[in-house]
Length: 369
Image (cartoon, rainbow, N blue to C red; front, side, top):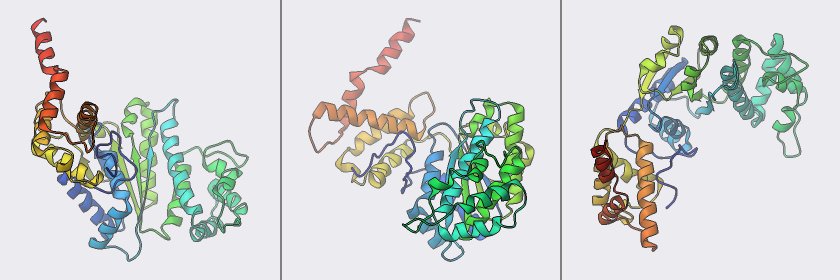
């Protein structure tokens, strides 16, 4: 196979979309609006763990996806989106969540600017007239930005400057960024420079369910950070806020009304509820990610049987649950047959179920309670 058709975690390189056409249509409409209208926007992705939210972000950033979207949707000729993803990591101490999100965004945007000498020249020009701590830090960085023998600016060298250390929230002789206004001013300088090349900057912030685990003051600080960033960058920015929550009501519980009112799209990555959707998902994963004819490695009747059993379980089903089950099936048949080419037959799947008679064990356990 070309790649694992059923990855347990969302791969960074995703050039295919398997099933879930309703969500895909919502994503395309949202992208179309963003290409047509320059105004900044906020999207919210929510749904259970393993529902495909991170997968969707990876899919939208793939060059193949971007090329198709640019072909069919209105856009400024030759100008694409730049998409980055950061995580709102579980905070180890008070105030850390917003700071870690800011630093993740700053580092990635700055690295893109340094990689393109024309973008860095634009940032240098802008910073020459900027006042305050941000302008001072950027001018300090610019002084040490020289082209190497390969004709490129060394990011590693710039990371040691006092200016970079200041903007990266490290100890610096220049000073320290303290407020969300400081964070926003620094990121605005990065985004403004990048908009010289890109039509839109898309920033996806994952794992925002961690907002539930922070203090009320930290949630307020994060909400103010998002609101101020959105206000200062009126055009050219899309924020994708990703939550592992089953309902939008859970999302609303950790966001302030000022942030909620600015949301353009709410996309629900819900549980899988239909057998036919599971059959289609398995088939398309084998075709598009595995790069093989599904019937060459698994009988259609085996796929149908697997789908029926998964959808018949009492607990809700996500795409990750399906991937885990397919890993189990192929691993069992591979160990059993020890031959190639490998092909899963319906009888193999039925044998696997009997090897660990889960339903019989549950039935007997319940009878003894």
